[in-house]
Image (cartoon, rainbow, N blue to C red; front, top):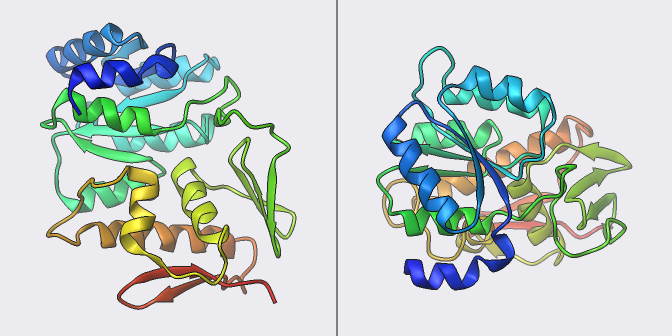
Length: 254
């Protein structure tokens, strides 16, 4: 996607409120100015603690762009605080660290995406556009009523607020985890490929990890996290079944 094409698709996104936490003043200034040129409202922070203090005052914010390597408090530590203060706030890591171990740690910590700083601004912009816009209360803005629900056995998905419930208990899923569960559960018993699961939250064609099929490790890690969150509520949870070598399916209710 070219920047001119991105301009034509950003209209509905243009008033989203972003924060960026990065100790590199040149990178921070560059990406902030580029985002403002596209109509985003951006608040800058050079280190994590000042951002955490600001976030604690409950400002309206739709998305956080977060660096990893910073003094005093690194990005993964900032993310841990964010998850306590604003558990549904989408977080994208922008970092020079490209090893898969960092990406997996970020996603395990609740980030919705992980992008290397070396990527072009048009790629970064597209990744931002793929994250659902949020309301001031942190729920995703889908254009649907908060009462829109899908029920599959013991699972209830509120597609308006992006909340999931299992046997009437809230499952604390991130936005990307919710999208994966929704994608699997809306067609119980159907085998869904690793690639399709990855694309539903990252956008079609994005690559990750090592090699042509590196994205599979990301999907496996995400499904492992999701299963554990359900098992924290119900130790017998076994609705997500693996189709070895292909992907996963949501087991139909009995």
